[in-house]
Length: 350
Length: 288
Image (tube, rainbow over all chains, first blue to last red; front, side):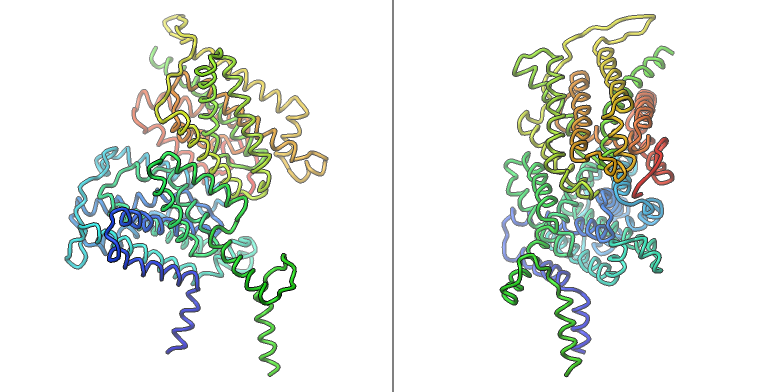
């Protein structure tokens, strides 16, 4: 039993476990602090995290998506319409709906757009985000047009109404946690499939991997994750408005994933925490925050490719290696594989 | 009938300015393989530089346009030479860099000049009249300058050694390099040329329409649309697609109202991008 549990933990991966652990600990925040500033900041971070996961999942397949706001809008509007028109207030049902609707829409869309790669995929997803916003404006009888949908009733969990700030925050934590678990399950279970697609899609295909299948799966789940972020945003604002889902806002979610580090799942979490906090600290001078984000993007792309998490991990590894081989040249590559084979050989000798 | 023809004229004048904008965008993609997210930023930058030159230095408007062209060209040149050049082989990194530059430009403009649109008007007013049609003088001047510039870009690209070198770069970077063409010299020049075109469009068009920091987004979206429709990297395709988009936009906003025309165009372009990523006139697609 213990061994089974340990192998389960290993298959989850360290970064994933740390991410989930951070989100579980976040449940404690509303009980530690009642400051409205902290509450609003943490809620914003928790909305950003599932959206950044959506970017992260697509980056695992070497695809950069600008469609996050589009799927967020689908998630938020389907929950808002279900709440306002059909009177559904059950949180679990609404969350499932906000995941399922974008994921279902992503199926036919994916069949169309996943044939494209590189900049063409970027362009097509950017157009998708633009089109979604225009559709929201042009269908007022359904989505409220430029007025949006306001007056969303408070959601309920097992019959309890979630009305005050604390329960809104707890709900955001719960949604982010669900998103983290889904992301972990997907990226760990299909780790090698995604890695093969990222490294060399043609080679992966020729080796018998049905690339199309896994890209579709990734795209659908990424859409659902963005939908969860949309539902979380709806819960904070209690209105669904087209301006919340501007096509250019996808830049923020991409920045969270890339500045944090797209190499591990901890990256989007750290990126969301750092960048949303920084934007909030700048809030008295809000007009500077896009420029700040821009400068950070420039720095990360030019100087620290692996983002905050990747760079930090590399520095830690370098230090560990320095202790192990004090005379090794500074640019010696770190090869954990070599070490483990050496250990295996020693084992075989004994 | 008169309304129909005037709408057509509006469409053509939109088309000319879009063509100038899209030319720069398509040059950057064709030659460098970079999707320039900062293109709308350069448009706004050009407009504000012209405004500042007229407003603070009391310079005449034509001189302000020249200053705007030089400033946006120089900014593009320096950006390519020192930043973009380092990651030029990686599509997604170049894309992120131009995004970062876009955010920096828009924030810089917003912080310096404030969010309200400043009063910036074309110096010549009035209109010519012929056969029941009015031709506003400012539009006619803007159109002729744009058309002349487009012609000049064509001459540059097809009749000079510099243009031939750039087109060779666009055709096949490896072969062009083997022939002795130097990307480190040509790429910054090409990028600077293209951003200068965006700055020129901004300096010419913003006094007629309007000048505000948030204009960068719709301008970028329109350039995207045109360049995809015409075929990424194709110069002729972008010019023709600009007129299609301009005319469709004019008629749909007069006869349909709202953003239905834009929506139709976007969906049309989306479908085209999926069926035929090379666009209407693009020849080859790398990496699609």
